[in-house]
Image (cartoon, rainbow, N blue to C red):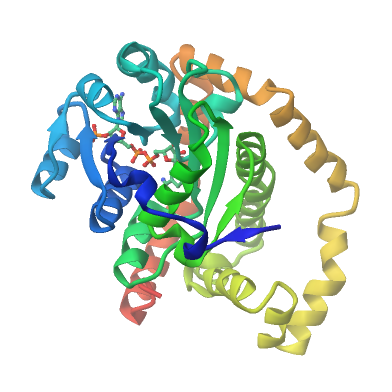
Length: 332
Ligand code: NDP
């Protein structure tokens, strides 16, 4: 796998261009500020809301989305994936002209064909692997966060150069940029959300239910499982030193317990479920289900969220949060 760095990218591919960031939220604000600090001319396309006010306070010119699309050479659609389809068709598509580039931070809408830009337009993606706040914080410290880069349409013959310049402008090439496809980025992202995280979260909830049922104090269970911050630290050490090597930071009893019980808790047969999850993503089954859910007004999602918010663990973790705060560990 090739990792692209600062020396592979040239900011001049953005230097004579106007860039419009559509949506001044998590990613929009961070990427706009970083690009401006890198010398790129940035305007903000925004509906009239708190984001627009923040952008104006940050010193940006803020214009309606349709106007931004008319003025910009490169447009970044940094609005929630669920609204991109409507905003694209209402405000962006009518303004698109040959020679423009359309940038995304996630491949979902292009990959699943919910947005089909005209062939005369470049379609690129720079998808930071980090929340927006850290895209900015890291840049301010002279570093950057990793990102995926992809080109879905290269009408100008310079789509990849523009994407790389963008990645450099937001600081991503300081860390490393992985070249991929819209399909791979989308499938991997959805797989993590639908196959990896659900197992962790469900295991936390079931473990909580069993332990509380067996008489352990609920607050202590929440503290033990994740509330003390030790769980987050284990994940951090996995990234820092390695998934197996970090085990040496724990007692031998812990290591033996974890290694010997792992296959019992999640048998090899679980592979089939993981594959099935990937199949549902790749076939578009999940995307069709999610589109219908949105069109119906989120009935299942609302119910699932309501049930999750009513789970007893929510109350039990209040004490853990207070302890974490007193320990000063929140910022680690
Ligand atoms: P946010 O939820 O922060 O929303 C971004 C902005 O979109 C809002 O601040 C608002 O901008 C605008 N917006 C919201 N609703 C509408 C609407 N109905 N019409 C027009 N504008 C609207 O989005 P994120 O930054 O989290 O996500 C943006 C993209 O980045 C997505 O594709 C996401 O998958 C991707 N991404 C997000 C990451 C993250 O850190 N959250 C990480 C990597 C990729 P304004 O206030 O200016 O009107």
